[in-house]
Amino acid sequence: MKRRLLPLPLPLPLAAALACSPGAQGGAPAPAEGGSEAGLAVRMDASELVLENRDTLPAYYAVFERGTAMLVNWRPCTTPEQGCRSVPAGGAGRLPLDSVSGWTAASDSVTLYWYHLVQAAEGGMRADSVRSVQVGRARE
Figure: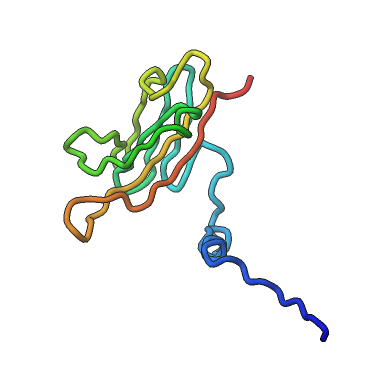
């Protein structure tokens, strides 16, 4: 009996991700390197992070030194009145690097997680989806 090899379909999550990517629908591709991610532009100056929210909703965020980000177990802040870090819609903000969790004099990059808050079905607020961007010092 002769065996026939059939092409395997892409796993569903991968197929969905490819089908929904901006490039798949003719839109502009997402930026390649840490700097801007779907509405939140982030860059690192000598002593601070500069965040620019290009969206119509506030962007909430958590930021960690890159190595620390791999170790920390965090969850999105969903109660803005309790001090969630955020950048207002269409606004900008600055964050001193020495206030970033895990930052030391030897650090050179951060991982920033950001999200929008939406109404949760059970009441309260929840993160819509958490995006991440890595930002490092400019190479000289």
